[in-house]
Image (cartoon, rainbow over all chains, first blue to last red):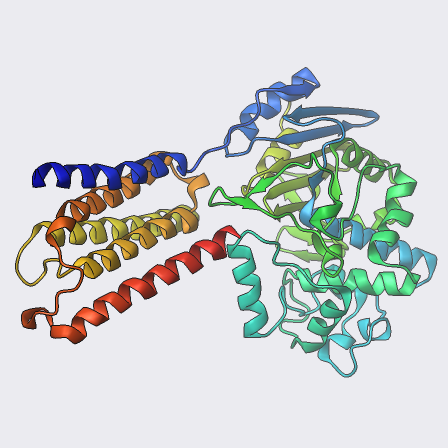
Length: 354
Length: 130
C-alpha cells in the first residue's frame, strides 16, 4: 500500500515536469518555406539564410536600374527594424544639413543642444558621425547601465528614454579616446537630436521630410513605441529563443529606430547608387584605419580589391545589412528576424557571381 | 570561435548545476545518515532550488545557437529528483526538531529557507515573463 502510494506520488510529480520540459523546450526557427519574388535570388539566398536560426527575411538586390526582391515568410508591406542602418540615414541628414548651410562638419555639439560646460559640448558633428568623438556607446552610471542590462535580460528594449534623457546622458559622460574609432549609440542619438533641433522639428519628422518623402519610402516609419508598429509586424527573438522587443522610441531613434520594408530599402539603395539620395555624400570616406574607412555613418571595407560601402544592424530581435559596390552599381539589402547577423549573407550575394 | 566556447560554457555550467543539484536531492531522498532529507520543509527547499536552477537554465542559455537536444538533460534530471523526493514524502515529518538534525532552530530555519526560496523563484519567474 505504502509502496503504491510512493509510486503514485513520484509519477504525479514527475509527469508534469516532463510535460513542461517538452512544452518549454527551446526551438530553432527555420526559414519559412513560403517564398515570393525573384526565383534566382530566392535560390541563391535561401541556403545562405538557412545557415542560422531565422524564420522571416527579405533580400533586395539592386544592379543598375534593375531591382529584384526575395521574400521569405513576408509580404511587400512587411515591416522590419533596420536597427543601426538608421545611422546611415542620420549621417546623410548631417551631410544634407551641411549642403544646406545649416551646420558644418566642425559645428560643436554644445552650440546646438544645451550641454553647459560638459566635455561632450566640444565634440564636432563630424566626430559624432564618424564614431570619433570619445562619447561612449552607453551612458555612464552604474544604475543606468544595470537598468539597461536588466531590461535587455527581460527582452525589453534597453534603449528607452526621451530626447531630454539622451541630452542629459550626453552631458554626464566623460570623453575617452577622442579621435579614435569607438562605436557610440549615444553619440549618434545625440547627433540626430542636434540636427532635429537645428531644423526645428523632431528627428522622426526630419527623416521623413528630408529622406523618406523625397525617396518615395512611404512604408518606412520611426515608431515612438511598439504600439505604433503595424499589427502584422514580424516578431523578433533573441539568443535564448525568447521574444525580444524591437528598438523604438524618440531619444535613441537616430541610432537605430527606423523600420522599413524590402521595397523601400530597395528604393533607398537604388538612390544611393545613382547619387540621387539626399546626403549621399555621407558615403565618401573621411577616415581610414587599416583596410577600413569611415564616412558619416558609413563604413567602407576592401574585399579583394572591391570597395564595399556598408552598415549592419543587430538587436531588438532582428538583423540587417546594407552593402553597396558603388563602382559596379550593385547593392544588396538583407532584413531578417533573429539574433544572428546577416553581414555574410549580404556580402556573398553582393560579391559572388550568380 | 570564442563566442561558441562561451555559449557552450554557459550551457555546461547551467546544466551541471541542475544535474548536480538533482543528484544531491535524489541521494538525500533515498539515503540515510547526515545527508538525508530531515523533513518536508527540507525537501521543499531543495526541490525549489532545483526548479529555480532549471528555470535559469531555460532563460539564460543561448538556445538558438545550440542543439535543442542539450536542453533535455535538465527536465529529466529535475523530474527524476522530484520523483525521488515525492516517493520519500509519506515518510517525512513536516518538521523534524530532533537534536541530531540541529534541533528546533534548525527545523525553523529549513522552513524559512523553503518559503524564502519559493518567493525568490516566483519573483524571478515574474521578472522574466512579465
